[in-house]
Image (cartoon, rainbow, N blue to C red):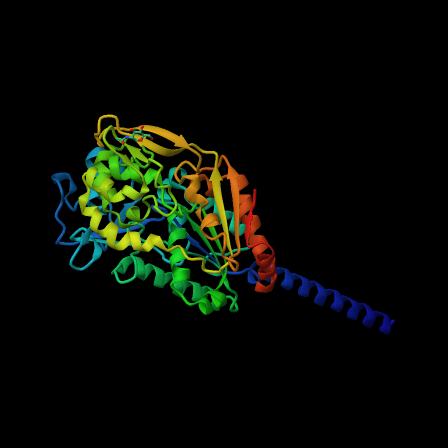
Length: 449
Ligand SMILES: *[C@@H]1O[C@H](CO)[C@@H](O)[C@H](O)[C@H]1NC(C)=O
C-alpha cells in the first residue's frame, strides 16, 4: 500500500514537472525566443507634437497661438495628424507651423521660428499605430500589422519597438549637417542595441515602411560590418521608394492634397516643398532613364536628370542648392549593406508616370498618365535594388510582389499582412545566421513571385 502511494506520488510529480517544463518552454517559444523587432514608419507615418514659444509669429490672425484650443498643460499639442488641417483657414496655420527652413550658412534645416516639435514615445509602437488615437477609424497606420505581430507573441516594450521620427527632416551626404535626421539615426542605433541586449543578445529584425527604408539603409551603411553582424538579423523593407517617385514631382509642382479632397493643394505646397525628406524622394537619376520624360510642358520635357531645371521652372529655385549639394551626392551611392533584406512591394495599382502641364502653369492640375506601381511609388523604384545589386555576391535580397496592394494598404491588407508575418516567423525560425548565409550563397537575389 505504502509503496503504491509513493509510486503514484512520484508519477504525479514527474507529470507535474513535465507539464511545468512544457509550459515554460512553450512560454519562451512564444515570446522570449523571438528576435526583437523594430518598426520604422514612413513619411507622415507617426504622430508629431508641437509647442509655440514667444518667438512664434502667426502667419495670419487665425493662426494666433490660442489655436488649437486644446493643449496639454505644458503647451504641447498635436501637430500631426490633427483634423483641423482639413478646414481651410487652419490648413494655412498647420502648413506654416510645419514648414522647414534651410539655412545656407549653417547648411542645415530648421523649424519655423518659435515652433518646437517632438515625437511622442520613441521606442514604443504607440505613435505609429494611429496617427491620432482619437480618430482611430480614419488614422489607422500600422495598427493591423502591430496587432498581428502581437498575435505572434511580440510584446510592446519587451521585444517589439517603434522608432517614430520627425519625418519632415531627411539626411544629407557626408560633410553636410543634418542634425535632426542624424540624431534619429543615432537614437535608432541605440534602440537596436538596447533591444538586442535586453533580449539575450539576439540580433534585431528591422521592419520599415516607405521612407523609413531609406533611413534604415543609411543607418546600416554608416555603421561598421562588425556592428551589423552583431545586431541585425534581417531587414524587411515594405513599399520602399529606393529611387524616389514621380508622385513627388507632382507634389513639388502643384502640391498634394494628402488624399483629402477638401484640402487646397496650393495651401500646403510651400510646406511640402520645404521638407528635406521630400527633396530626398524626387526621382533618382540613377534609376530613371535619361530619355524618359516624367513631366512635360509645351516648351520642355523633364527627365530625372533635369531636376535642377525642374525646381527652377516650378518656382522653387531655393531648392536647387540643397538638392545639388546635399541630395544628389547622397542618392548617387546606394551600397549593399550585406545584411539579409526582404522587400515587399505592391504592384498592379495605377501610379503616376508622366505629368503634362498643357498651359505651362504648375498651379493647374496636369493631365496624368499612369503606369505600374503601388499607387505612389513606380515599379522601377520599388524594384531598384534588384538591378543595382545584381552583381553583389554577398547580398541576400528577396523581393516579394503582391498584386493589387497599394503603398499604404500593404500595412492592412490581409494577404499582405499574412505574407509579412509569415516572413517574420520564417526569419525567427532560423536559429542562427548560418542557415541564412547558406541560402544567400545559393540564391543571392531571388524574386518571390
Ligand atoms: C517632348 O518629348 C516628346 C516625345 O516624347 C516630343 O514629341 C516633344 O516634341 C518633346 N517636347 C519638347 C518641348 O521638346
